[in-house]
Length: 156
Image (cartoon, rainbow, N blue to C red; front, side, top):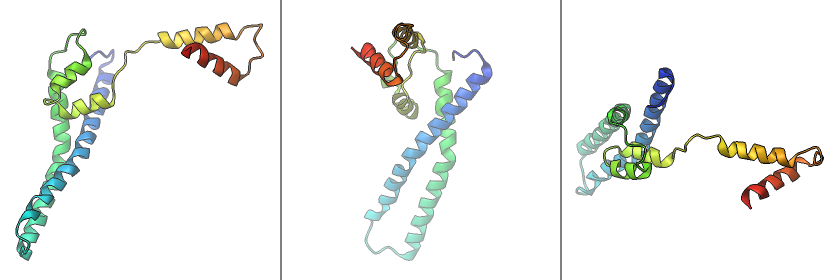
C-alpha cells in the first residue's frame, strides 16, 4: 500500500477489517432467517423435542456466525492485500467486477466507498476565482452574494 508511515498503513488495514466485519454482520441476519425458515416446511405437528433441537440449532448457528465474522473479515482482507498490485492503467470498477466472487464483502465496500484521486487543483481554482472576485473595488460584496457568484461562475 502507498503510505508514508507504516503505522498509518496498519491503521488503514484495521479500519478496513472493521468495515468488512460490519458488512458481513449485515448479511448474516438474512442468512440466519433463511436457516430458520428451512425446517418450518416439515410436518405441522413437531414434538417439543424437535422444537427444542431446532431452537438449539439456531442458537448454535448464530453464535458460530458471530464468532466467525471477524475471522472471515480478517481472512478476506489479508487475501486481498497479499495479492499483487494491479496496473495503474486498469479500471478499478472493472477490477472489482472481476473480483466480486473472490472478495464479496470488499466488493460491496468498494462500491459503497469509491475512492477519488487526491488533488488540490479544483480547490485551488475556487480560491483563485474567489480572489479575483473579491478585490479592492468589490470589497463590499456580502457573503451570500459572493457564494452565489462563485456558484454561478463554477457551474456556468
